[in-house]
Image 1 (tube, rainbow, N blue to C red):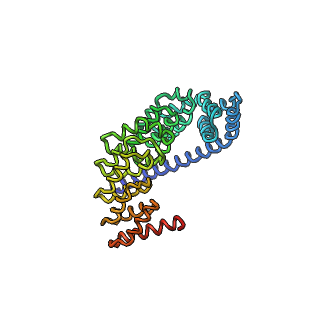
Image 2: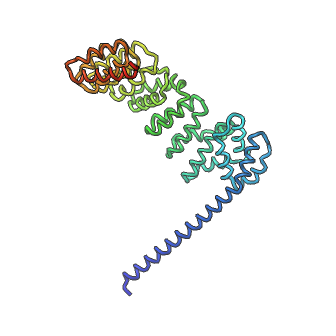
Image 3: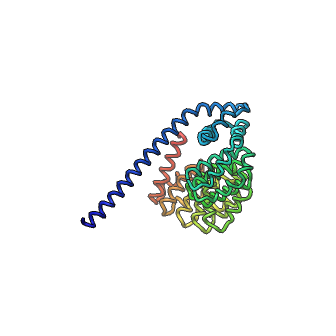
Length: 357
């Protein structure tokens, strides 16, 4: 027989065996999954009823103890499904079940497995029950250590859990994590950190803004902008004149969110005279938001420059500063520079329509 034909037949046999084994494994797994779902559906009413009774004040969790050895996953899922429905004492009782039923230790063990999905589920449950102090004590530093986990979802879960403790050290760790993460993760963590914004402004944010690391400064400014609230931000004015253009562009929009002062006003006026069109335009928008009357002469000069970006920003800013800004726009409508005249006329018309005039 041709050796090549023998070799080909052997390969076909191996492939057929592999395909058959794969199909059989898929069928077995599918049958197991269906049985598991059916079993879960069958015991779900009893589990939910027992959990509700315990949350409501009953001290008998015999039903749950009967199922915990064979249906720990189902009990965990049912407990986790109540996470948005309870608070206060009811939440404490729900979390205490994790200790009473030895589920907490199971989740701690699952947090060490190599199965990514199992680890994520474990950390979600650990984060949930850490709202309860006895659970938090047993979890220990596991959540803090998870801030450096290779899996992004686990880092986010751990960060949210640590932030909810409200302890300054935990909140600061989450803030520093946000500085080193991607923009997408930082936006997510911004919501987690929003309730602690004032506390962070006392120490860790000023320290970060004084840093020599531009990337960390930019990340901190992005967080501050994402919070969109008035805050006691110390050290903003120097950043409006920073050597790095990116820092300046992030800092200017924050000026209206801090207490106005001579240092902030001076940086805005300096920005209006900056040769970079983006900086001058950012300064014009900031002056408009602050209704900074001192900036009117500089805005008028900006409206007569050669940069379309600066002209448009300055005209829009003047339109927000009635009545003096409107008077300036009236004059600029007759400027020999066609771009200036057009921008002034359009900005004035928009302002009048907005005011109903």
